[in-house]
Image (cartoon, rainbow, N blue to C red; front, side, top):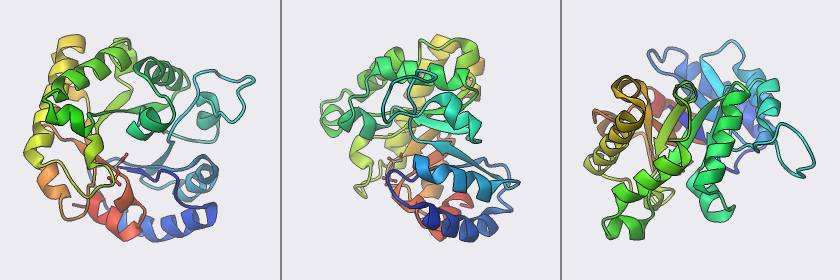
Length: 244
Ligand code: 13P
């Protein structure tokens, strides 16, 4: 169960969040919990979650290890401060910041080389869904952004299926729609990396996940977790999702 805070919360607000959140999820069994926070909040988040059952991640990285790349943060930097995870290829980065399949693959490889685990995001926009192209889009994103990983690299990723039209809109994909997309993604994994990898890969659903719809989503066979935006900002609401 992963939180994507996007561009929300100051370090002080991060401290308050964890003070309230950690006791609510301390008994969450059989579930990995990650919070992906803005860069400036990461040191506070990592200190707060030390010796807890919650891990922390960034929301983006640059693929060079270091260099003259003003404004960027590298994989080794995230690793050095204690991040476990990083999100790559979120639809907001594709839409507003020019992320492509090629840069998704570069960032993912760089993150894994730095020792991070990666949540790689894929998903179709509304026009693509309405014109029946969902599976073709997922295939293109998989082929360009994920299929170029080695088997060992692939073992370090989690895939998040996020239909772009369901993000922040309150329009969740129905559990059946999500289940169909997850099944299609798992089939792509099986074709490229084999049946064992397809069984082992965790595929998260993201897009308006809330405490009251998480159970029906998680009941679907191919949905292994959630990547939660808005509902992860409130400790009670995210704890309800974690403890569904
Ligand atoms: P919302 O949960 O706010 O729809 O955001 C989903 C998302 O983009 C998570 O990465």
